[in-house]
Amino acid sequence: MKREQWLEMQWFKENPNKVEFYEHRPIPIQEWIDGYSDDDDSPSGLRHIIRPKIREILIEIFKEPGRYDEVVIDGGIGIGKSFLAGAGTAYLMHRLLCLKSPKDYFGLAGTVPIAIMNMSVNATQAKKIVFTQINDGIRTPWFQQHKYLPDNSIMSELRFSKSLEVLPGNSQETYFVGFDLYTGILDEGAWHEVTKEKDYAEEGYLAMQRRIKSRFPKLGMLFIITSPRYVEDFVERKMKEAE
Image 1: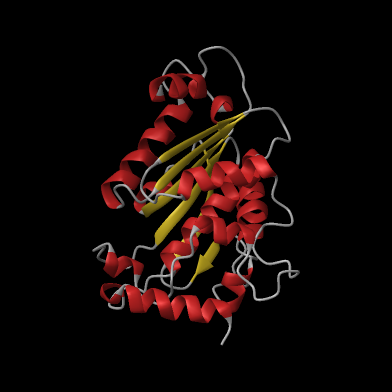
Image 2: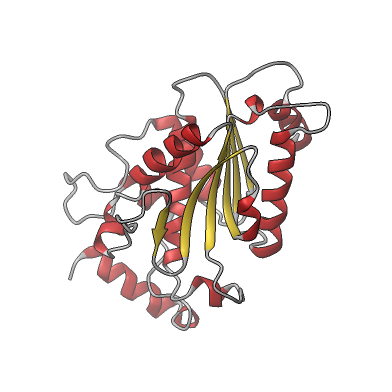
């Protein structure tokens, strides 16, 4: 018996109350990153490509599920902001797909899918994040082994089984508010348009935050990633609020 199959069997044995709702064992974050193959030399997980600091931050975020519901990543180009958000989102998708029926588990009626939404300054940037970083994250062995891969016939979004979708959008679109939003990524948070009438980053943030917290309290997550722009920009304000 392979190690992961044995661990899953042991997890259900130790948590008999989970059998009703879970199809798979949710893998702890450190194990998810470092790999869970029987072969120590196999490129499983993210251990061969992840930077030590990004690994440390991901473990801090997810080692206690529900401890954090918002993550702000502010820094220069190339530090791994998008990778961190993409890997974190893939991990959250894995936890959803461990459930037999995520919608039933959370008491969500109707046919509206559970959504993960990336909101960026424009559609091109949004797709860059969705279809590279998140897509890379779901190429880890767990998704492959359980055949939880997106429908290749649909290019505008990533559509999975169990009524789960990953959607790109930009700061002037609000169609995501019709979904049961589990995770939001506000990309380039400091660079969204601000007019006299509207702060697009603030409005998008509030819309995503409200939907996540109303449907998935203490379980959903909102990532804000950006490079700095100016003193007292949107992300700096959020950092000060958090402090």
